[in-house]
Image (tube, rainbow, N blue to C red; front, top):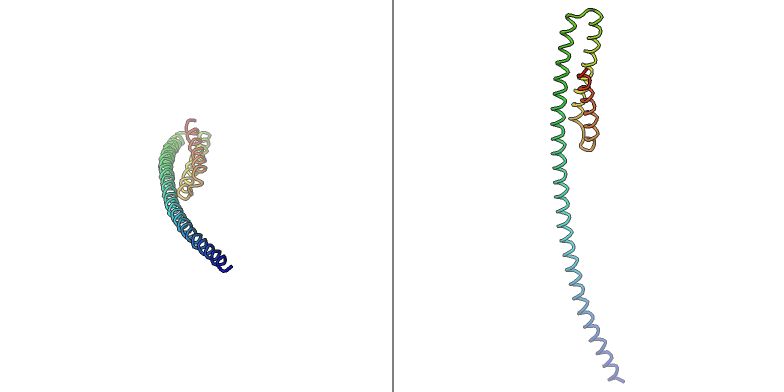
Length: 152
């Protein structure tokens, strides 16, 4: 009976040692896999951050380009409005009282459009990028209106 007990005890001991050996290998393998996954995740996070930064820089450059173009359009429209205002002043000097009233009204309208464009530019300087497209569309409408009025 003692022999059987010793044989069973030996088998249990051998099995425990064998199992614990596999377990250490498994643990090491799992730790290596976790470490590799962490490294991959760090690399992916760093890459994603760089992509986001690059996209942000591209967007800021696009907004700056749009603002520069819009500023040029506003300046052109204001210059044309100023010339029309000067023409209205010149026509008022030679006009009758009835015509002067008409030209004064036209001059008031032109000045109002000019002020709206100037106010739009002031808002453009404060607009955030996420509202930029909406703002740009609204200002383009004002420029188109001013240009349409100049054709009269």
